[in-house]
Image (cartoon, rainbow, N blue to C red; front, side, top):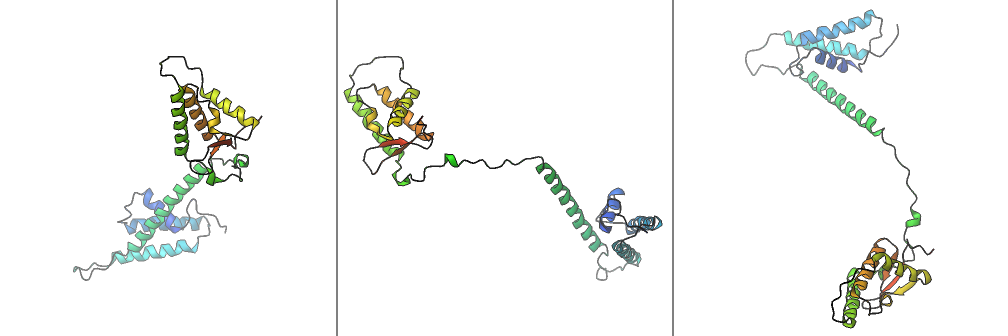
Length: 243
């Protein structure tokens, strides 16, 4: 005598489900005579091959024979005397087991799919963290910056002759960015209004303003104001390169 796993079956319910699918049996209307015969042939075949039949297979065999015998009993004519279908409990267990098998296949497929992915170890980004000495309460609101820009724009407009002259753009955002960066390399902060002489073309003011917004967004500068209506200062940001 030697003990082996029964083919691909993991118990009597697995074997029954295999037989139902193989012979295309309606699981909700099982012909117990045919199913029991097929099941018993499999159990007898195992015994002939000297395979140690697990007790649970024998228990299921007894249950199938009992259900088969109940169905062979004479049926009563009146509705009141009809008994419940003796196959009902077996059908419920088979459907539940079938659901478990389908869920198991689904989870195994998900597992195999997930095994195709490789996880990257976290990257150390501590050098990009903000300076802990920075006081967030001093962060300027964009509205205040726009108000300051409007003040510079209005002042430049007052000092600009009321003539129309069409010229090719000669002052770019890159140049304005370099101008601000150059001043911040020699000193840690500068006053917003110190960037202007108030005699430059209005286009220079607009270009400076756009450059400051881009630099702030990129973390090259921080813009601070100690209190409302106070001067606006531009200081080096976490991504500013002094070199």
